[in-house]
Image (tube, rainbow, N blue to C red):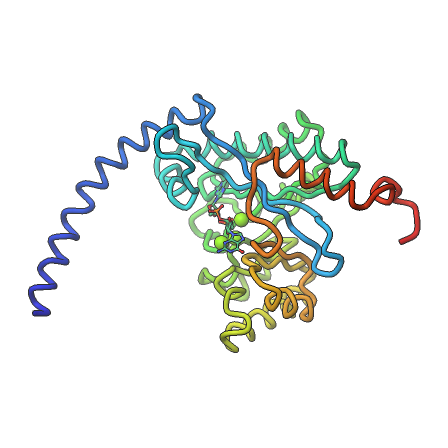
Length: 292
Ligand code: C2E
Ligand code: MG
Ligand code: MG
Ligand code: MG
C-alpha cells in the first residue's frame, strides 16, 4: 500500500544519512590526503569560437584519481570539499595549475588561449582571494586577460560579504568574470545588471533541449539578446549535437563548449590537440599578421 511504501521510504530516509555520514568522514579524510598524494588532476575542455570553430580557450575541471575508486567526478567531491573547507587549498592548486598550463601553451603555440577556472563560494569569501590571484598571475607569468573566473549564478550577494567589490577588483587585475550555470539560480534581472561579468554561460539544462522544447529555445534566444544588450559575451555549455550548434550560431552565441567538440581531457591530451591543430594549420598558425 501507499502507506507501507511511505514507511519504507521513511526508514530508508533515516538509514541513509547515518551511513553516508560515516562514508563522508572517511572520504573527507582521503580527500585531505589526495592533494598531498598527487591524486588531483586538472582536465581541460576546449572552448570553441561559434563562427570560426577554432579553439579560443579551455575550462579547467578538476578530477580526483583515487587509487582504488578510480576517477572521481567533481560533482561528487566538490560539494564535500566545500563543506569541509578543503576547497580553499584545492581551488588554489587548480588556479595555479591552470595558469601555469595556459602560460606554457600560450608560449609554445603562440596562441592566446583563455583559461576558465571555477571559483566556489567559499573561495569568494576569502579576504585574500584578489591578492592570491594576483600572486599566481605574477608567479606563472600569465597575462591576466587570459584568465577567466567562473562564478556560479546561485552565489548570493547577500551571503558573501563584499562580493561585488571582490569581482570588481578581479576585473581591475585584468581578469574576466563569467556567470556560470546561468538561468538555473533565482537571480533577479537587477542582480544580473549589477553583477560585474564579462560573459554569461548558458546552462546545459537549456542547451540540451534545443530542438526539443520551444520554451527552452526561447529562453536561450532571450538570454543571448539580453546578454548582448548588456555587453556580455555568451558561452553555451553542453553543446552535444550539430543542431545545438546551428541554433546557437544563428542566435550569435560567441563561444560554445561541449561533447560535440571534445570532452574534458588530461593536460597532456590537450597539448596533443593543440599540436595537431598547429600541424593542420601549417605555417598559418605562426603568422598572425598574414591575411586570412
Ligand atoms: P561546470 O563548471 O558547469 O562545468 C561544466 C560541466 O559540464 C563539466 O562537468 C563538464 O564535463 C560537463 N560538460 C561539458 N560539456 C558537456 C556536454 O556536452 N554534455 C554534458 N552532459 N556535460 C558536459 P564536470 O567536469 O563533472 O564538473 C561538474 C561541476 O563541478 C562543474 O560544473 C563545477 O561546478 C564543478 N567543478 C569542476 N571543477 C571545479 C574546480 O576546480 N573548482 C570548483 N569550485 N568547482 C569545480
Ligand atoms: Mg564552470
Ligand atoms: Mg557551467
Ligand atoms: Mg553546469
